[in-house]
Image (cartoon, rainbow, N blue to C red):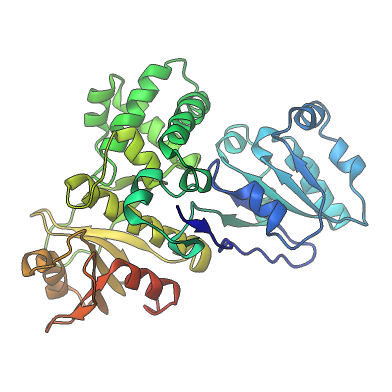
Length: 382
């Protein structure tokens, strides 16, 4: 079992500046606030029932209790009391106060037309663990446990995943969906996980789930709003071929997705291949969150079936993700097809081979650890 290094998230707010910090439940926000944030600040933890009860009935207490001697305040799980944002806004404007506001979902705030501070707060996001934040990562084990800190460190990650899915996803997120049909939402989660990394098809998921395509579309939007998943958009700059225009959907954590889909990834089987692609993409999304928020991440696919898993930037880096320990010429067809139509600055295949190499037509075949180390070292200059 691996251990956790220092988290990569870094927030250094200037005086009189505030920020939102978003991230799914159990991603480590509260631990980071109390152990890593270098500020001696009061913390209002709205997960504590007594504190929640105080502020939900009397949000003005924030204004009355604020002290100029402690101008920086942390409010954890701000979405639980949206009315506090009006008080935050007033204190920022009239007292020069500064806040770090954390939450696992902005959906409740937007749905209730809450005050999102109109650009007065910067935005940060915390992701599940990255490979750079752990010591002794076992890839096969990480596919099962996922990279949420308590699951990754657990001696029995399946039990923790079972509790997370039952208590949080099926109940609390179902409440976000404003539905009493928890069994249908549970089935949706299973089907959505089974189609993780595939082209979004609301009609097919609706048929398997037993609800309408309109409801399924709303369910996917809820997963995105609660940061439990994201869409990967296609590269749309057309040249000589007709390109696929449909988005893909990915869950935020490989362990959660595999548990929901009842996959058991073992090196060499098809489940491992899908999980490996998902794992590498999540590392790229974490890099974007922590190092390069403007980075454009897409995929490329033609109507005839050629597909490249990831395009970074303006064709700066094209990446194929293959779990193979022996990358042969057939696995390079899509990259070569892409290179024949576009100017690609760097072409990469991320795989489980043990040594890096480069083909005559400049396709870099990189072991996954080498690729990730190069990514976080900014070696790709994206």
